[in-house]
Image (cartoon, rainbow, N blue to C red):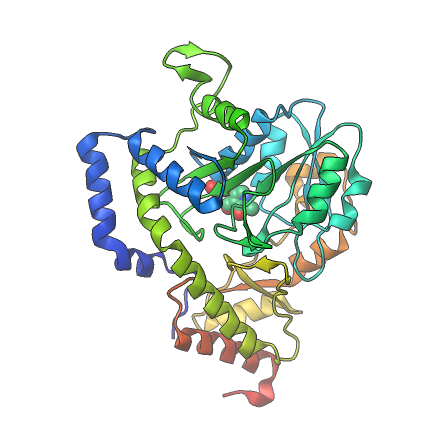
Length: 372
Ligand SMILES: Cc1ncc(COP(=O)(O)O)c(C=O)c1O
């Protein structure tokens, strides 16, 4: 049985008429760049996140970049983030002219280790970006406490955590600003590129709105140098349709993850993902740790079961960040994860028999005597 890593088509088929109708409405109103459909989605998404404001932008990368610019991050500043994340988190820091400073992650959750945060702070540290990796929020209470003590801003990279919770608070609502990606494969995915910046601080929201629209609040009156980072009208309309379904889709992911946990927890050589008791995990990614990861991925691919790796090289060892001077061994937990992670197929429409197929194959690879 073929098991894709992701099946966007299955989800599209379940909402096809509503999507067609939403796109038609945008076409009828020719509201293509920003406009009423984006504004409506922003209202709905702020309510969903429990923040006062949400600003739609062109991607998650732009959300992070504009958030940092709105906080005044610039040349000479340092911003601390986790070594094990997608490169966009660090690129946004670099694109402000600031320096990314990486710290290690907690073994188990693979989120920023708050115990490592204080030692990385210098006089130049302006902000910290916890990344809610794979759909589980970082341990926000100690991170926020340290940030407040040192007067640093907190920007949540919630690109993988739409609807995730920490002690019943929604991802994106706990720091000064929260950033989201709506890349198509995300838990809430656009049909193209998209992102959002959420906050309850009116000044940060105002700045992000200006920055995304050439620094203007009134057309052709430019109060600052900005950029074009507006969200498309069509994406706003599509995201409004999909947002209504997000809680049910997240529940389906959680159910699939519970099944995976159950079927894999006793398989020798598999470490299932750790759920922190303070979090509601929304499983953007379901990643197990195994030795000999590449051989396992190849064996599964030979059976038409498709996996991913998030991510094979931690950021401090990426060629792009060579100039920062980090060495191998600097962040053992992030490096171990990078060499052992296997992301299994995960999407709301995954079926019980697909999960049985994936887990059965993993078991027969690792425990050949149980081979079917
Ligand atoms: C943790 C994280 N941060 C930032 C991004 C960047 O988002 P986008 O691809 O929408 O620019 C992503 C998306 O892949 C992500 O996973």
